[in-house]
Image 1 (spheres, helix red, strand yellow):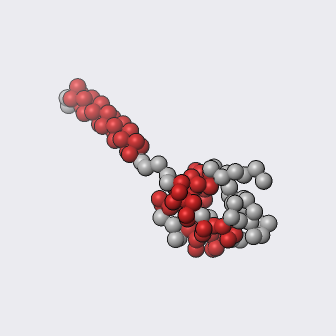
Image 2 (cartoon, rainbow, N blue to C red; image 1 turned 90 degrees about the horizontal axis):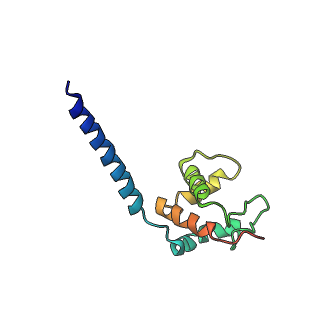
Image 3 (tube, rainbow, N blue to C red; image 1 turned 45 degrees about the vertical axis):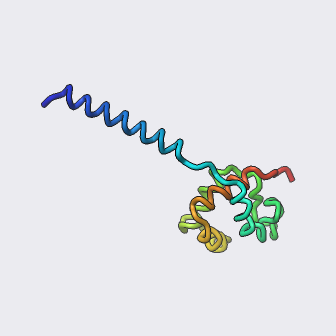
Length: 116
């Protein structure tokens, strides 16, 4: 077996893999906050027009939440992995959102003032 050639192939594979990861990360589009603001209309009825004054006290404040948390939560509702009292309502809403919509909405919500 030719170990030097195998080593060259392994090094080339590692370099190629790292390059693909860097390019893929840099090509990811930044969230569109304005598009997220438009999608927020789906949320405002329950979570309030400001994202922090829900229709019921049980509805959480979503303004100022961490974007990654919001993305994970919405995707979990959409896939049915997240359950609970209001999961069916959230799933019905999340099912109307694409992955890009979820990213945009999360970026918009994360930028809202949560001080009240």
